[in-house]
Length: 305
Image (cartoon, one colour):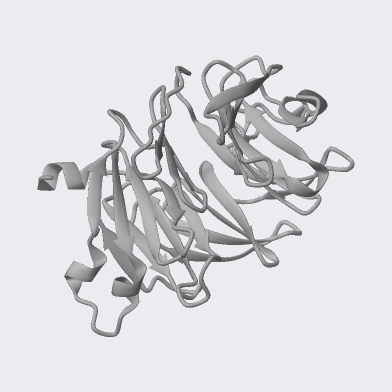
């Protein structure tokens, strides 16, 4: 890949391996790169240690999402899902698949995209066993409420739907559009609260915290620009988006800190909780670099395509 392609590269997705020793990252050119975290963290590491140990073309367009099971790596791009098992492939003709989540207890993969529906794939048989219908526009995100046996989906129709997996029915609807005009609803679940990235009426995009039992907003975070990805970590919400900063937000609505990254804009973040030896935060965005934070307070180094 030449210097011009590297200059215009964006990292859209990340997933750690089940052992926690490798990081898979997907870029806008349809490539998936595999990085060795042991090599990158070694005292004897060299610039070559921060390069992929494997790079392959997975999709014709951007790799928009990655998720790992105990033995499989799932990737989705423009209209298809691929499963690297490491040789088996699964395809599904859904326009613009934007999100997917692995349900370990159900041995299922749930995907949502441009046909406004959620599709549930049985990983044992390779057959899509159910379709969850109700959204009126593109689905952009999905997450699991494991304790309740529910999944949540966010759509451009301005609603978050809560689905019961046993009945395949929508049991609650959070009508975010009644509070805010939104373009999409990325969301992240923790306990009985839900993080939603929205577009405020008359203002810029904002990150909001919702209480699931009352189905009402509790906090709006004063972050500038559009928030594209967030995750709960201990008593914080880590958020990235428009601009180079990784924001540390308190649940009450305050921004505790903002840590600079090497990319001018950020698209995704991942927290490696699978290995205590390789515990880290990684962020990717509008560059060929993936920044590594071994301490949340500063960027330690960068991996690069």
